[in-house]
Image (cartoon, rainbow, N blue to C red; front, side):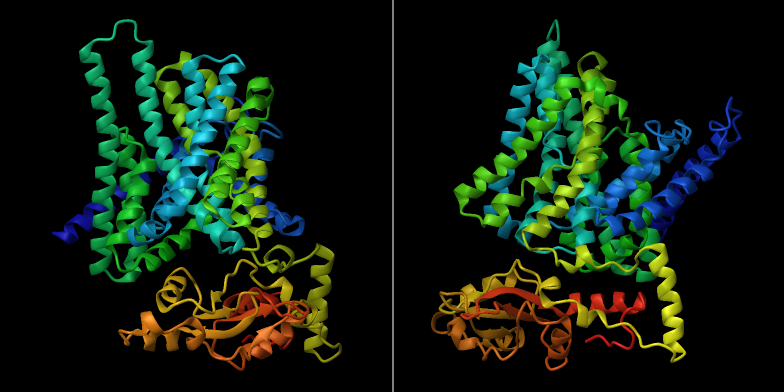
Length: 604
């Protein structure tokens, strides 16, 4: 039975993709009045990918997020600049862009295992509620004062809650950032979009009831029933789809997972569109169900990553080609007010709640700016509203489409700046790149050739040129020396490392706790009352300083099996300021070797 279910799933998915391909071929064979309009859709895809490739290379030289580069590449090919792409191709590329968005939302849902929700609810939920409340309040009030109707103002205030999931998460994964700002950003993005979808349906229900000339019990009941069917149907479809994915992955070999996951995702997307269900909510639920019912969530997301990169490029380049700079002039003062009010609401809301809850200065300062990107969810909801009532939502959609240009260009830059300035992104990720100018690349080729022939000395290794401060992660907390066993365990549960520095009241490193030793202590039932962090720590014989060359870190990791090493200040007292991870250092040296800059370096 399960085999038949899998075959049905793949058959349906194949029909879905084949139908899209057939539509593309139909467009390509349709006569057009101009050379642009007769362009084959494969040419459109090829132009978008080629432009994105060049933009991605340029982004490394200019140190820009690749998301921004892909959007700009599409923008240049779109109607705002060169206008070389047929406009009607966008509707036939829509299945691919929606599938890309669906997979991002699926990944967001997998960040919500129930045990983690219990751990973060005390911090994340107040921050999320504060940020959403002030964003909706400022936008609704400000837009109303600027002259829009109450219904339009409330609708814009609701749409302002949404944060672009694909844009934000792609930047976070690209920067390899980790820490409170990064984790809270992912959590708040998920909550924002979940609340935005539900709040939109509730707000639209209120708008319909308030604008009806003759409200009857039958019409009210029909509207409520539509709301229940939309939200309930999305939750039910996501629940069933998530359970089927988890069960099928349990009994299938991993080499079949990619076909299963893509096929199921395409099927769920098609059913959502056919039944007019909010597919964004469907895939959030799918992710939550999978992460809580499957033992191989990381392998599942890893399988999706194998095609996620290509779909991401297609998504952002197509999305960029749809941006219209002319709409910026159309939205005028109201559009400018929306940008300012939404930005201020998110920044002020997170800052206020973080100040009241005792969050770290980094969270208080940088969490709000990391949430400013806005695109897919808001555009989709505004389009839904326009299809239901163009008179009310038409101007709202114009404002959203016009301001998306601003939020999508500057949002990724602020998200990247937030994780960099908060110390959660290694500086090396922002300053080290695997290629230079075309001239330097040509020079490197001949230099390596001459070096291999013994005619020239190879270049100084990257590990000699870079310093520890450029590869260390600044967002780090040590375990207090007098922390009891339960506090140590709590710290370990929230850490990604296996080696933990122990600090005194002056943040000086007094020892290191290693997970293998801590794991042995779990068997002593009296440890939680008697043992302190200082008792579990070993002497801090392995420490680094920011001014040391990366070579020193390489040599140190050869002496230990630890996954990370603490970094302390150069001047006494030597206070804990960061850590260097073996994985970060290995990735750096691998990139160095691929670029031909490291000569005979060996990684740790």
